[in-house]
Length: 193
Image 1 (cartoon, helix red, strand yellow):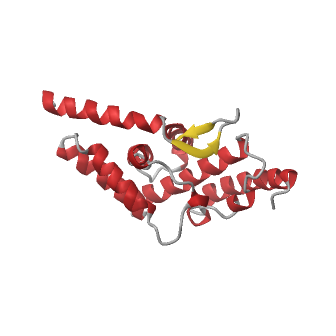
Image 2: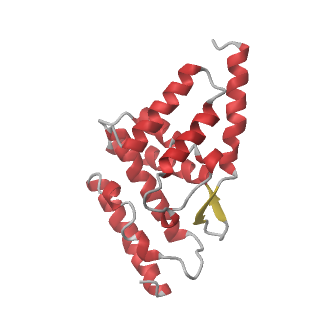
C-alpha cells in the first residue's frame, strides 16, 4: 500500500495532469471549438477498446497505458500541431522534459513506468507503440473530417500525414483509406486541393 507521502505525490501529479484538459489542439470539434489534448486522448483510448478483439497478440493494457500517457508532456509544454512543426526541432525532447517535470511528485517506480511507456511510444519500439501511433494519427485525421474547420483548413496535408504509421497493418490501412475518402470529399467541397 502507498504511504501518505506517495499518495500526496499522486494527487499532485493528478492536479498537474488536469492541465491536459486545458491544452488546446489545432483540431476543432463538430461545434467549431478547439479540442483539448485530453479529449483527443479519450477518443484514442475508445478506438483501442473498439478494436481490441482485432489484435489478440497485442497487450491491450500496455497499449491503453501508452495511449493515456503519449501526450501527457503537453500538459506542461503545450501542443504543437503537425503543420506547425519545424524540421530540425525535436518536439519529443520538449515533451519528455515536460513529462519529467509533471511526474516528478510520483513515487520512483511510477515515474519509471511512465517514462518507459513514453519512450516506447516516442521511439516506436514495440508493436503496442506502433499501433498506438497508428490509432493516434487516425483519431486526428478522423477529427479533421468531422470538425467545423476554418475555411483555409489544409485537407491536402491530411492525405499524407502519418501515413508511415497508419500503414501499420491491413485494418489501420483500411481505416485510413475510409478517412482519406472523406478527407478528399471535404477538400473538393472546400477547394483546398
